[in-house]
Figure 1 (cartoon, each protein chain N blue to C red):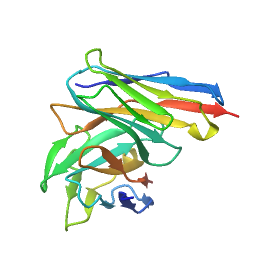
Figure 2 (cartoon, chains in turn orange, yellow):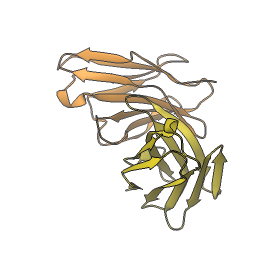
Figure 3 (cartoon, one colour):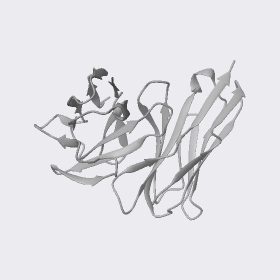
Figure 4 (tube, rainbow over the protein chains, first blue to last red):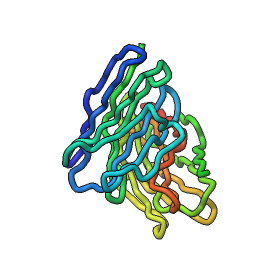
Length: 110
Length: 112
C-alpha cells in the first residue's frame, strides 16, 4: 500500500539553527500539507501546497517557515531560525480525496 | 472559523463493549469528514472518509455517520478489543478551504 514517508524520524537542533524536514508524498496525489502537534495538544494545520504553490496557510506559518517541492517526489518544510516553541511532532500529508499522513518527525529544539 | 469538538475526551470500557465517539463542528458547509486513529507517539492512520453527500461509511467493526445539518458525526465501534486502544481524531475540510481541521481527540482504553 502506498504511504507517505518522512525523514528524519527524530531531529535535535540548537535554538537559532535552520532545519529542513523532508517528505515523500504518495506519487499520484495532488495536494501536500504540513501539520504539527505539540506534545499533548491537537494536530494543527500549517500549510497546504498545490500546483507548486502555497494554496492556504495558517497564522502559525510565519516568515520563519517555508515549503518547497524541489523535484517530482520530495516536499520539504524549512524552519529558518528555530525557537524552543517549535519543538513538536511535524506531520506531512498528501491527498487526492482522503488524507494520508506520514509517521512524523519529532523536532526537539534545545 | 471552523471549530471541531470531540466528546468525551477520554473513555475506558471493558473488552466486548460497543461504543460511540462524538464529533461536532461549527461550520456545516464541509467538503469531507475523516476519522483517524493515533497511537502514542505515532502518526495518523485513516479509518473512514465521509464525503459531504454521504450519510455513513463502514469498515469492519467501524461505522461512521454524518449529519451535516446539525454539524455532527459519530464513530461507532462494535465489540471493542484491547487493540482498539488509541486516540481517535475527527477532522473536517470546509468548502471554503483546503485544510483538514482537527478536534482534540477521544482517548480510548479497552481493558481485557
